[in-house]
Image 1 (cartoon, one colour):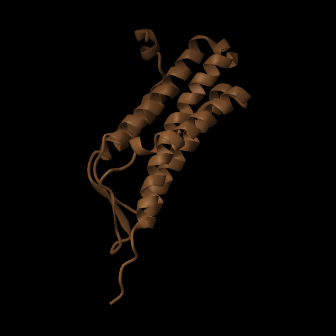
Image 2 (cartoon, one colour; image 1 turned 90 degrees about the vertical axis):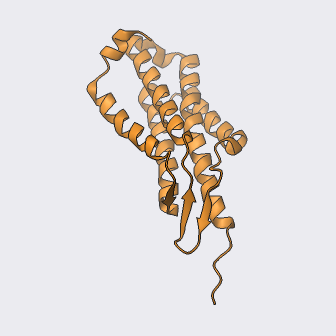
Image 3 (cartoon, one colour; image 1 turned 45 degrees about the vertical axis):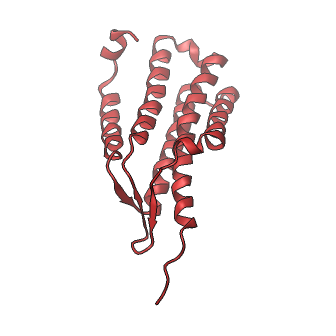
Length: 169
């Protein structure tokens, strides 16, 4: 990547990336999360990946198919890779204890990298917006990262649902 591209990146891009980076770093510490919080992040990332496809490629069928394929592959084949190992349901508080992990940070940076590369490439060569190969590949990336977030969230929700209900004395 050319230094000129980084130097000409608008300041707002870095102001959006910084809080995402901070949030990803916060995920490296153990924490307790309610089911709403476990659900919101994956849904936000799925929405972010879809909005990235729409911003870059509009409603191009190949781009939408690439994103759908990425989400599908992530949900079907990569669930075990993103599982929050060691997470456990705490029925007394109605929360999940989730050990710290670098994985959410990696997924956030990966999705941001797809967004940055797509935006920078389209800024340098706008005709790429109509290139089916570029649209499909970028959209596959968008969908894959969004799907990995969704798979992780579903795994956490499943862990909570599989836990036995507390006994009433």
